[in-house]
Amino acid sequence: MLNLDKSQAAFTEAKTLMPGGVNSPVRSYKSMDCDPPFIDHAKGSKIYDIDGNEYIDYIGSWGPMVVGHAHPQVVEALQKVTEKGTSYGAPTLLESDLAKLVMSVYPSIEKIRMVNSGTEATMSAIRAARGYTGREKFVKFIGCYHGHSDSLLVKAGSGAATFGVPDSPGVTKGTAQDTITVPYNDMAAIEQVITEQGNEIAAVIIEPVAGNMGLVLPKQGYLRRLREITEQHGIVLIFDEVMCGFRASLGGAQAAYGIVPDMTCLGKIIGGGLPVAAYGGKTEIMDMVAPAGPVYQAGTLSGNPLAMTAGIATLSILTAAPEEGQPDFSRVLTIKTKQLLLALQNAAKEAGIKIQLHQAGSMFGLFFNENPVYDYETSAASNQEAFKVYFKAMLEQGIYIAPSQFETLFMSGAHTSEDIAKTIEAAKIAFKAVADFLNK
Ligand SMILES: *Cc1c(COP(=O)(O)O)cnc(C)c1O
Image 1 (cartoon, rainbow, N blue to C red):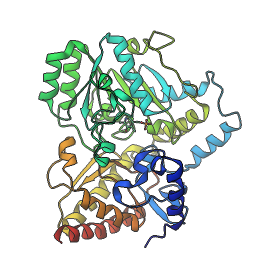
Image 2: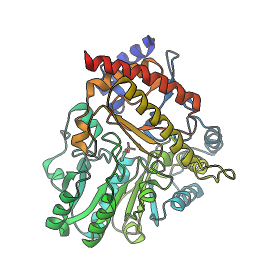
Image 3: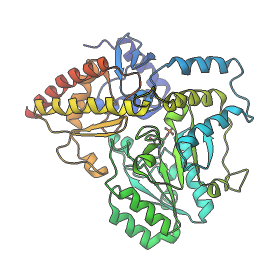
Image 4: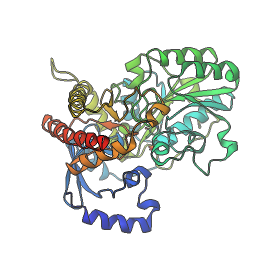
């Protein structure tokens, strides 16, 4: 048995200080009926709690830690820059350096604005699209999460699925009424909405690879058709690649599927573990943003030198030219992820259970569902009790996965073949436990 005494005491105290004991809901493990480990430190592929337990980490701070925890290049760069002061509230060369690095991999971004969170990026992108088109409504897809700003917190995926709250109290009807929601991967549904209300719609925002209702991939041709129909109606197409950026492929879902959106939101990885996100896109849209244009958006700590530095260091590792004849960083992650998933599929089969395994580059996810998962409804139909058995068995064996099957898991550059082998052995035991549970 894992000893979590110190974590349990810490959680008891934290619950008197913060709602549910946490500063972000899914960290509480509430839906898993157990207490979360409190983390002391992390290095490479491993994370360590305050009771001294070691785990192989597939959460990666919910996506950002693609090069592994405390990567020496990132740590060194941060130490150096910290000596020079932690914030100036004035322009720096670092901001242009990160902008150039991002734009070199995302050519659809002609101009970019750095912000502090994915929530800010999507909220600001919608505002810019509204300012640009002079229209008020926008479309989002059921089960896609775009941060917690009011108008985007409608039918918003994993948090909702895990906690059974479809829409959040505190979001007014007035705010929600400009948000049109349609099922993911349902071409007829979006075509109908655009045919009927196209000239009132400023933007369509989508996770082109959806990671917040579990990992759900776009159907063949879906994104292409979405691009066509939005273009025909003068609607700004926003790809929210906060999660799938630098993950689905180095150039994100847009490179993987060959689609050019009008705007892109990035986050998670571009901050290398510090709070950074960004939105960007066509110059004519981005020049609507203040001070170039009238659409207001600002931030005291936006473009913070430490945050830019962590982002630059991380993206430099991701974009470095590989040694001759070797696959590049992203390709290696994709191969490692595929190896893990093949073994997991076999292990599930051996245990006699049917699961759905999805992969996009270094993102992966597993559903305890016998049927294909392609939207919110099919995702939510997965067996939560079976997942709970699996989750606990994995944690017990030192494998740190998200406490919800409606979250995506991540491979990092630091995961070794030994880590992967250990994970597979743990999964064999966990799948057996699930099979026993299901047959009982
Ligand atoms: C994480 C995430 C966000 C929100 O980013 P925060 O930094 O948590 O505000 C937005 N969109 C997507 C697709 C995300 O995965």
